[in-house]
Length: 268
Image (cartoon, rainbow, N blue to C red; front, side, top):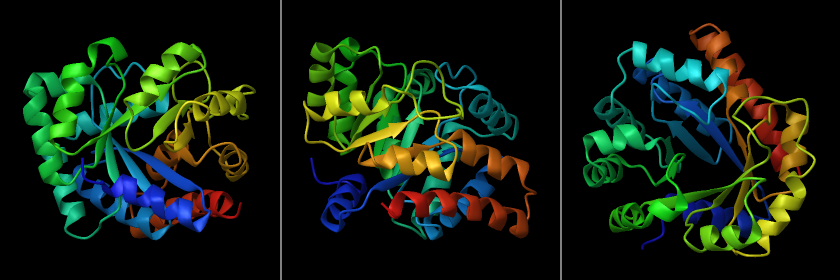
């Protein structure tokens, strides 16, 4: 595989001795045109990589905030083709690394190989497939590889060491470390075992490790960045852009919140 934008970004961060900031957005929330605007604003705020959630009616790994974002996106008329067009529009103006945070159902409904080809053509760099079991992933990983897409792998607090070793061997781009059991959503603090889990993963791979699930304040983002190579923030960002007015001023306020978190991560 050729290096993707994700690979190049993590190499750049490593050379600079900096930690990465990954922002999650529900694609199509509040609409696809606005998603283009928000991604460009996030890039201006210093975000290193964007996870775009493909709208799906039954996002089992997501808490209330991201579930509601997916519902809003679907009600606004977001489709797989529409999201691909949204990515292509972003690519006309930006080279920020982007991956899809996705469930298998919409991809299989279209045809997995075709979905991968469409994503690569639009300008996506990789996929985090939430409900694809490791044991069943072989054929799908091949389609990712053929389209030069990173296969981001999840490791959770309940993953045994032997399974971690198998998972990370097949990861590319980075390994997503889920900081706690349960679904996405802002928490009061970083889970106690998060640091130990990151160390367990790093003992078995040289790939970058990103820590996510539950991070919602600049202080939490800074703490997470001290543990891992990158920090993933989702629900807190989705909330900011949803709760602020959908105006240039409202978007600027939401972006300023994200920049506080980015600055906390970059200041380490």
